[in-house]
Amino acid sequence: MKNLILSLLLIAISFPAYAQANDTEAALYNVGFGAILSTIGAIINKSPDQPLGKTIKKSLWQGALGGYVTFESKRILREASRQQQWEYFWAAKLVNAAGTSIKENAALNNNFYDKWHLNIGFSRIEFNTKDKFSVNYKFMPVALVYAVGIATQTKFELEKTLKTGEFIFSSNTDRFVTTNSRGIAFPGHIVLYSPDKNDVGLIKHEIIHIYQSHDFSIFNAYLNKPISKWSSKNKIINWLDKHLYVEFHRIIQRSAYWIEYEPTTSNSYYDNFFEHEAGYFSYTLH
Image (cartoon, rainbow, N blue to C red; front, top):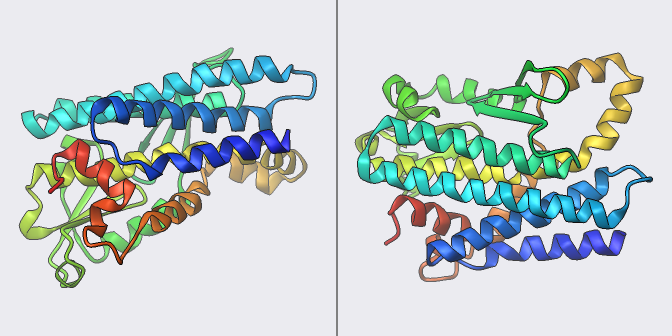
């Protein structure tokens, strides 16, 4: 089983090596990425008495479904660039949350409809639909730390935040000039260079980066068994598990981003898969 998991993981990691040139390739990436990573999680989280073949079959189609829904959320977001209407931003956000939820359920070896969630800034709102409906609030500590730091150094853009569903700030800091950038996506938050803060394509580009972080949240499901075990033995860990959603996946996501970064390439910025995908869905490729 270890060899199977390792093989699937190597295949999944290889996906970002290919830039998305059209919607077909973009769909295949999102579907394949979701299917494989969800299957690895389901294998890790399955109970000993569950047949391996049945687990793989179930997680493959559920992960693929979640990946396709995620792809559609990015396409909806792309439409917002053309229409510049807040409904598209929120529709994309809700569809993306659904796709991520489906993939996380698959990775936990659950039914794809057992739990849904919505991330807003450093807040994660979970909707449990299995057995009895309930709502649970968790805060994401990494995003919260960034929120405090960003809020003390930038201007909060209330209108853009309400229109997009993402916490957006602006700043005139010289760091944008020295790094030749116009915006940056932090965990759960976006900071835009003030002179370009009304550029819809730029806003879309940074939102895609937030969606990419959501893509990698599947990895958190891989830690479900040890966390549940510790939680059952320790009241403090049990309380933390109920009220915190720790973004462990950020380590893997940032590592993958920097592996993709090739500073010696003449067009290194968009040679990076993650930047290319953000550019593709936001019409900022050039």
